[in-house]
Length: 411
Ligand code: UDP
Image (cartoon, rainbow, N blue to C red; front, side, top):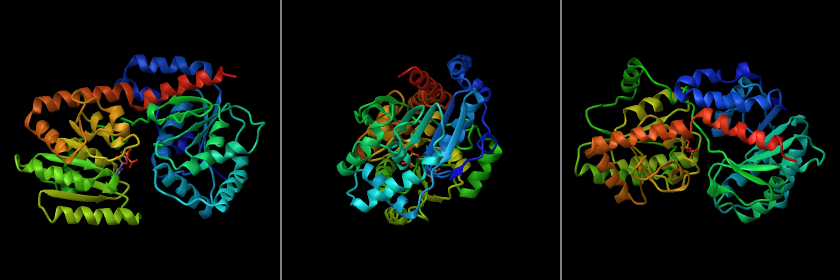
């Protein structure tokens, strides 16, 4: 069983560092809310120490919880290839893909969950992240503390058979958490909403120096003469990169501009490679379309690209939450996106971004921002303030503390 090293090995974050960004009131609220929880233990359990959004957020949330007086632990369950095959199938099922689930697969899930049970601590709160460790809830009835299932994906299209299997495990928890209200499954426990957040002090989001900017521009061979339309996303059809190219070509009929498509994960994901090939074919060596297949260590590059962009696009066909949207909004960028899932939850049309459903609508919205810099600036500014109020790490911590206080007093 892997028990992660404690705070020192996690990200070095301290609540006070955020005071200049989020203001005194929020930091003071957090301190107040943390007081009744002082010394209480909270155990987070997921299935990956690195990679993926959950690990990313735990790396920062766990030390912050410690910093405000909780005893926070993060443990990673240990699976087998067969187990991860099952949970990957479940993952695909959550995304609405047709899957085949056999009795043998379900037995593997239950068996590996049982073997991982010694991982569970006698904590006041046990937080099960996503479906991989959810089987732990089925092992013992005499467990202590309050158990919570945190669903980090969009479960709207989940395959019926998979959900029928997982639901009883989720119902054994005292509460469940979803990213946006529409995702609540109506299961027999308390349901809460905790949207994810970005860390304004991480390399992905912190302010960058001119020198850092220049270095990234040189490394990527960017030409800053023409306005930049940017989409940052894994090369995945659900992010519709080819649709972005089509919208860009419509825009360019009216205004000179360039398109940057930056993504990653293509090398180890066969489908990513295929989508990247489709994108290259659609771009057809157009000198105004730059495609960057970035390694996973490209936080600073993504940060700089987002800061250099004139307009940021997120033309997803589906989007669980859409952290790239949050990141662009935090950088005060005018955002053009499709009105789906978590994007609709984050962006208010005309106020904090422009939403549409089609290629033509996307093109029209990009043009509006390129032609009306005042509008672009005003929308970007409001977007940044919206993220400051709702989607920064300390806000997330405050909402966690409210939730833990509620749970603590529940029987
Ligand atoms: N991202 C990255 N490298 C890439 C593409 C994306 O680091 O090549 C980051 C992006 O900045 C964001 C996250 O991965 O922080 C993607 O999260 P989002 O919710 O937008 O989409 P997902 O990929 O989870 O569907």
